[in-house]
Length: 290
Ligand code: NDP
Image 1 (cartoon, protein in one colour):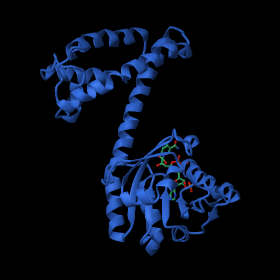
Image 2 (tube, rainbow, N blue to C red):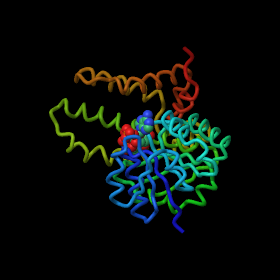
Image 3 (tube, rainbow, N blue to C red):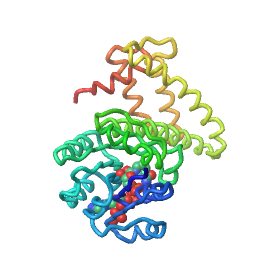
Image 4 (cartoon, rainbow, N blue to C red):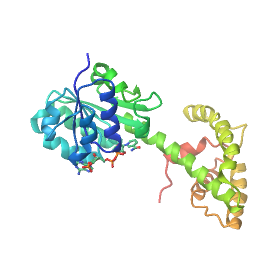
């Protein structure tokens, strides 16, 4: 019932993936460029392959998690004919275009290919809080679901292999936006010699309340209807000036905030002053011509 699985790449993430498979009782073969990173896993029962070809030959299901797609290609080239007929799941972070290229290579080689994005840190792997997004071969997702669920919750997004990296990068964009806003806010708070930790008692519930408005903004975007009863771009433009001025007075860099101000200004300049903030999505999709 438990198929053998190979894990290629034993960095922080690959080691966590191999560990999760061993914990679930999978016969796990591992390979890493720097061989001694396999020692701990060998002690837990992993079979250590001497070459990539040997690692790939050992299992019908091969998980790859390395630095980037360039390294993925280099490794798969070393595999030669051993890849034929295998199911390859690539959990390396990259772009939708890179996922499409790898899927095209796989189909030429007679390889089933599932791309994936890991929405977790290594310490979360093996718990349901770790979310893994998959796209590409549904055959792999259906056949090896339980093995993939050893890593965490598994979500299949569709046969287009680029969908997992697209969603991965979109979620990370939202995360960096939130962190950027938080860091800017904390810089403001620290300028008054106040404790950042005390501030979290205000900012965490505030962000939770604001995130409740995301589905409404999303509905406006989907419908292309940006009229608002909440707040117009024009009023946000007016408020933003005070906000930037205050930061300059406090000696706080506005470098994370001015791009948002510029986008709001462009919306007003293009005649959308009475629209709500959801209009900004349309502006991002139509970049200003240089
Ligand atoms: P690490 O830096 O810990 O590991 C990188 C891995 O890539 C190592 O196995 C390394 O081998 C291998 N590698 C790098 N260059 C080469 C090469 N030229 N040839 C062969 N192997 C090579 O990174 P992580 O494990 O943290 O990340 C791996 C992937 O997982 C990345 O795509 C990352 O974006 C993604 N990821 C990581 C998360 C995290 O929190 N860590 C979260 C979500 C995704 P060697 O040991 O020999 O150097």
